[in-house]
Length: 188
Image (cartoon, rainbow, N blue to C red):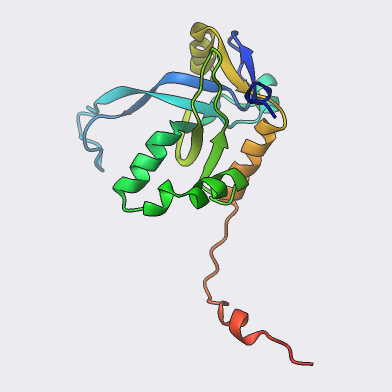
């Protein structure tokens, strides 16, 4: 499939699951957030501009069933590799790592196809390690101000939702059943 088939280009303020919002201001505590909150309630915040993708289901957005929108961070592939290498993950620069991302077997990451036409997108990855919620009214106004932007088409939008669901439904069992691999042979 061609890269164009992954995305629609939209230019209105409506929000749908799979909408990519470039340079979206996200407000984060400035400095060290501590508990308890200082008695004068003075907290500093800064606005980081990051690329986000909408995870909230389209039906909930369209039918006004939510006032907050769940978003995940979108990172260019080169940044993902660079970050992994900083943490000692040499595997991140391998062809096998790229293959696992394409296969969807790295639960915290979901691949987005590059797009060379305007609006452009380099090979990118949605990381479920970086999640945000922002008010729907804020995001709708922000989206309307962007001009042309990308929206994942079906079935890629559903693939992203499925990847997110798999990430959150993982279960770590409290026992070690790996012995079964060695001891589970049945002899006729």
